[in-house]
Length: 142
Image (tube, rainbow, N blue to C red; front, side, top):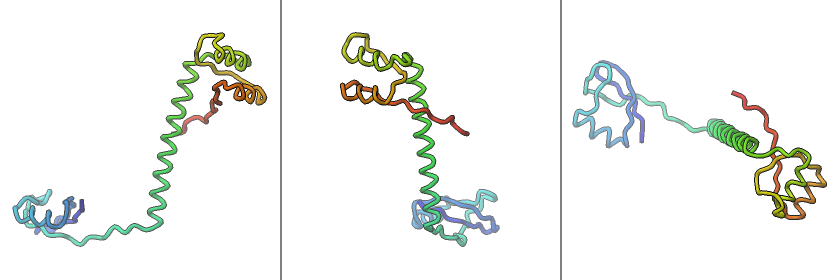
């Protein structure tokens, strides 16, 4: 798609998108291109400023895309953490004990959250108990 700046015989300027220059010419010849102000079908291409992509523009565009992706990912992470917290039992400092009971089938399987010391975390992992830290995330900013 290409955007053309057009001007009618009454000197009104406007923009229109076409699939290419030949598409513009074909539609113009059939009287399908008209001025949105005065409806004149006598239109010509106006002088256009080319859109030059500079490295600065690309860098800014890339940064904006990355910022949007990061915001989106953080928002999804916040939703996931909230859902885990809402749908899990907080067992507090009993976490290592409860995690082992669930792992070895001594307690019903369920989602739990709680606290564990670093050496307790290592021991659980060494035993093959599936655990993961739940991040504390900053509040979402507008």
